[in-house]
Length: 205
Image 1 (spheres, rainbow, N blue to C red):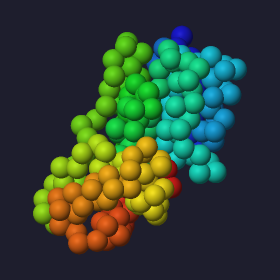
Image 2 (image 1 turned 135 degrees about the vertical axis):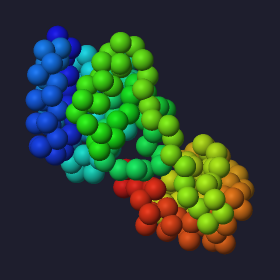
Image 3 (image 1 turned 45 degrees about the vertical axis):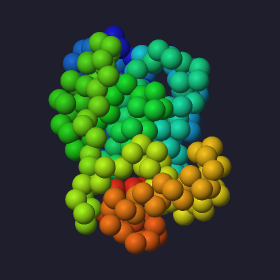
């Protein structure tokens, strides 16, 4: 039996996943937690084979940060990220944090089961990255530009972004200039507002 830990703040989602997984006879749920900040402790105590990790959990706790914490002490546990949001940075950030798979909650429970089996078989399963519809067409932003953009949406200054990414303030300004040129916006604040208001960036997670 594959031991599963579910990190999810909605009881109905936990119940649905538990029912679907246990019905297969392949999985057993060893624990459930609503706050990702407690995920590492649960992993240390329960030793799951797989973790289903929501991105946005109770108390503003980030599932992506929880994955980074888990990976520092456990390289082997399989981790699948779940989210209900079409946030543009979640897929690349999930990969960077050490996740093995990624599933949108809009998918069917059967799809969840397929991904769980694939990941347990040693495969990495991630959807095709989303593109951003912009006034000048789909924006071909680089990974670094996306990092800068996400921090812009958190209302961080150039100095704060530079410190967070270990780059210079001039480099931050250079990336902002490039992003404005690619997307057709004249001001960085307008680009950030567009990203947040259209749900492409979630500044809280």
